[in-house]
Image (tube, rainbow, N blue to C red):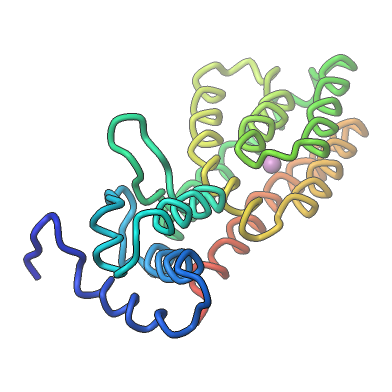
Length: 232
Ligand code: NI
């Protein structure tokens, strides 16, 4: 259906109408309807979110729209860009599954090569990064710490091209991790898996460590897919 760039899509209008009676405050109403529209794909990844247009579409002032967008940013569903303003963050089950498939192929390969050559200093650094993650209140930092933890374990693989690919896909997984930490309370489970992985590495158990990595990536993907595909 053709749409002009400055009018909300008919689908968004439907979502707005359905949500209007359910909430006490304008901010709650806008946040809930926007969340539904983003997670349901009505507002696709990268879609611009202009405050004045949204205010008009919702029939509210700009203040609750701004507040709702900030709440959605905290849930990793909206991103603010310096010049483009707010846009819908890219959260797609298919993209997440694609990244997960690559990670489960590459990371055990890297770990298998690296693990026999890891030093006590490497294990100490990995443990430090886990402790940092335990204490980190900002989900925005978790992706980076997670990436550094994993890369520390793979770093001695001696395969720079492989490690570049591994790091690239860990970085691609960041926004999904951030979303899971914020929206799904993923942190404690992820950390349990990280500690189990580090213990297997320290024990020199290559098979267990590789199985831990595969499970870690697979379980995260399953949790996200279950959430994004859940019936409302
Ligand atoms: Ni991890």
